[in-house]
Amino acid sequence: MEEMDPIGHEDDQSIGDAMMEETPEAPVGEDVTIKTVMEYMVNFREHIDSLVSGIRDDISSLCDEVSMLRDKLHVDNQEVNEDDDDDDDDYDDPNKYIVFAKPPVRKLIIFYVNGVLAYIPRHPKDVILITRLYEFMHFCVDNFVIVIWSSKMRHNISHVLEKLPLLSDHFLFTWDQANCKTYDSVTYCKDLNDVWNAFPYFNDLNTLLVDASSEK
Image 1 (cartoon, one colour):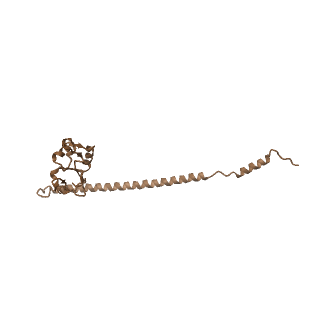
Image 2 (image 1 turned 90 degrees about the horizontal axis):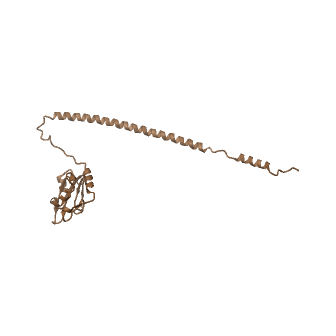
């Protein structure tokens, strides 16, 4: 009768061999991922190189165009100078000193005073300017053509202008009640046609009226 191993070494060895045989191999996906990333980086670099090359070509083309424009401008200036030399003796030409004005690039802004730029009480000397008026008007003067037009009498708006001594000289003009029209002796209205007739290069397309009342 065959004796059995009480410890069971033979069975344990068989189980261990089976486990070793069933152990899966190490995954290879990591190598595939690295290869894919490297291919992407190569393609991306080629794309960047192509963009840089295109930008360089555009810059070179622009430089050539600028050079051509400079040469053309130089030739035109020479022709103008030659024409001026030829016209030196034309002192009797009646049209020689006519200047043809072009419409201004800046738009016209017409400001009403009371209620827009300041508050004018019953005693005009106590006029109160709106907050940060100086900074606002400084910006407007730098970017637009500015006009002050009030329906009040001249002495009422003079106190406002006195508080803006550095800006008043830059206003195109300052009008008061005398330049307004009235139909009932109470309401004074501003007719923008009067401005456009006095300054034809302004019109309804480049004029902005800032008033506290739509009726005026």
